[in-house]
Image (tube, rainbow, N blue to C red; front, side, top):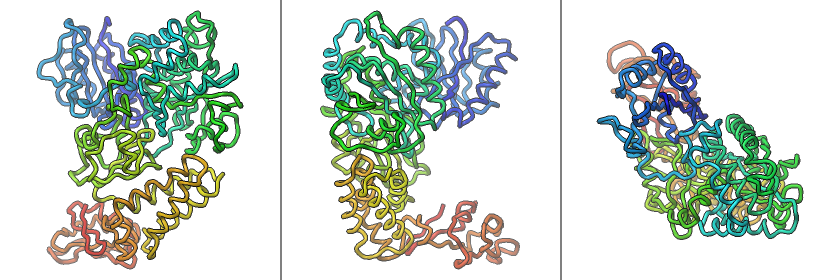
Amino acid sequence: MSKPQIIIGMATCGLAAGGKAVYNKAIEEAGRLGIDVEVRKTGCVGMCHREPLMDIIIPGRTRVSYSDLKAEHVPAILESHLKNGEVYKDRLLGQFKPSSPDIQPYPDTQYYDELDYNRKQHKIVLKNCGFIDPTKIDEYIARGGYEGAKKAITTLTPEQIIDEVKKSGLRGRGGAGFPTGMKWQFCKNSPGNEKYIICNADEGDPGAFMDRSVLEGDPHAVIEGMLIGGFAIGATHGYIYCRAEYPLAVEHLNIAIEQAIERGFLGKDIFGSGFDLEIIVKEGAGAFVCGEETALMNSIEGKRGMPNPRPPFPAQKGVWGKPSNINNVETWANVPQIITNGGAWYASFGTEKSKGTKVFALTGKINRTGLVEVPNGIPLKEIIYDIGGGIIGGKKLKAVQTGGPSGGCIPSSFMDTMVDYESLAALGSIVGSGGMVVMDEDTCMVDMARYFQAFCQDESCGKCTPCRVGTKRLLEILERIVAGNGREGDIELLLDLGSQVKITSLCGLGQTAPNPVITTIKYFRDEYEAHIKDKTCPACACSALIHFEVTPDLCTKCGICVKNCPVNCISGGTGGKKGEKIAFIGDEACIRCGVCFEKCPFDAIFKYSGGVKKTS
């Protein structure tokens, strides 16, 4: 590196937080200061809660990261850091540890790796995200890119590659957790000269953005993994099935494929081995069911995205009727490093049955939202508290939902549980693709089950009756309960119906859709009983079961609630002495929207449900 660099996070999270304005301002200010500097783009480093992020590297000094930026912060940062050679403390996040003795660190500046969010992470899949420009293949190559593919194709046999993947213990990261090496072996052993490899990037879980971030920040890792897998099973054609709602990911994938073809990593006679492979990006229309592999293959063929009965399995008869192997983004991104470093190296992370690391998307009522990669087996509480920083506003943790809309809700009493396939399954949940939604004490678990059931019902393809009708009936019962019309026997009906839907549904969507209902009943049955028997919501969250009142001693008669009420059901609230003309909420006209509750700056408005009273 011959001149300073300014590196700005320009993935979806960075752009949404204002990264483009920061990027443009950095170019403008560098010109104004007359500094010869390279302004670069990069992907998501995982710290979505601190975006926009900007890193600065001066030759001979450590890389320094600044966070929570606006364009107006850029001039002072560049003036201090690039002009005066001093870190700008106001927006400082941390510096990266020197990669060699020739690189000098800045004094009194915390190391990035020692931040609470990063200390317990171990990045394999996310190793390059946030550190390379995903549209420049040379930056990927400079960090060891395509070395694994070269090693596999020029020095190993397909059998040796599959054995190495088996030795690693890598399991599919898309949800089911099936052993990857075994899956490859089945496809390799299937008769036929024409085979396909497929990357499932149809990420549709609410609160999930693992695949999107990898594709936006390090697309070559996925391509290289598919290249290795294609050689191992004898496939010469490949598809990356990505939902069209990920335009930046699709753009970066297409750029990466073009670059890989130009360098000879895709196409004909790769590495002079005689092996050919083409990869095509197929954009999906955003149907959640297309995450199921047979539905995905139907969509690739131009058919309606609906699952097929199995057997035959894709390894026997997949896309276009040919043997096919499907893995998700994270699974493919692990493969190059497994081949480069060895299966035993990868297996040294994680637990006996759940090897390696897992990427999770932290969302919900948690202080530090973002993307984390941790060794399998880490206790759930360490992800929530040590990495995620605990619950917003210091409130109590109530539950964590893992595995997306078809995962289970795990109560706070099980936070010592290890995060791996077996431990979460024992609680009625799943690892899934890696969504992790955190809920606080104000979350109604009945309403949460209703929300996820509504998602699954809406996304059901309708092909099989148990899923099409069963999820609809489950949703109707839940909607009735949260509306205050629950009946005796509803809990038993939900459990019985949920069990039947799980057993009889054709594909994984229906087979797992009842999980949030079943686990919330298992761990939060008292909330269901309160809704049904007492017509109350202990969390004060279900609008049909709450009402709002003003506390006279706290009302300052500011009039904010009156002005913001959309149905004009609040009277008083302005003028007079203390205790006079306070706000009064007309309960019959109130639509329970909660605007007054949210807007009151003095916490004078409370919401009630039965004997429970809550303030904002």
